[in-house]
Length: 264
Image (tube, rainbow, N blue to C red; front, top):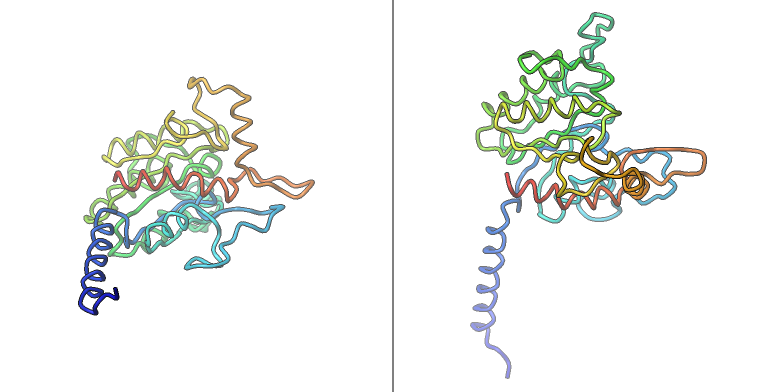
């Protein structure tokens, strides 16, 4: 028996209501997200043996296959990926010392980039600390200027709290920074100081190890660390190397970063 126009319209109305209810149950649906960081956010797939690190279709065609776009695609989000390879949080120590006159050396986020955050953003995440270990001074928890790593956090976190009262702010404690655990410690301390939630990639046993393994004393054996590293680093052409996360790792980690966003 054929359905009448009235019955079909009623079903459409019912389905539309169900779709809207599903959207309301997803706190990320349709939201605007500003994701900043370095190469672990922008994506560095240099020397890759596979040409599979670019989205070929969809809203993000031509973009790197990195965690912000995987998450945004699943949740119909607008994402501003501010990740820049090699970048840092505060000013470079060469600029601070006067050895360089370029305040934009290594493109510090707290120089000009932070001013580009849209006023209507819903989520802000920051992932720094890898390059900072080489190129910034650590400083102390009492530093207030963005001339040290501590000072960079103490500069930017209260700025975000004051200027984006409707945004949910989160920090990702990086999974490797060349043997500088004190920079991860500084990130945790500053997040606690300012009441900002953080996702601890090397200090949380409920998160899979990636290219950085675990913090000292967390009992991850060397074999396991090497296994995870080999699984998730960029697979390079013969004779080349690149320890950055591969596209498969970006997709893999996108699920627990998404879970973190949902908790903010």
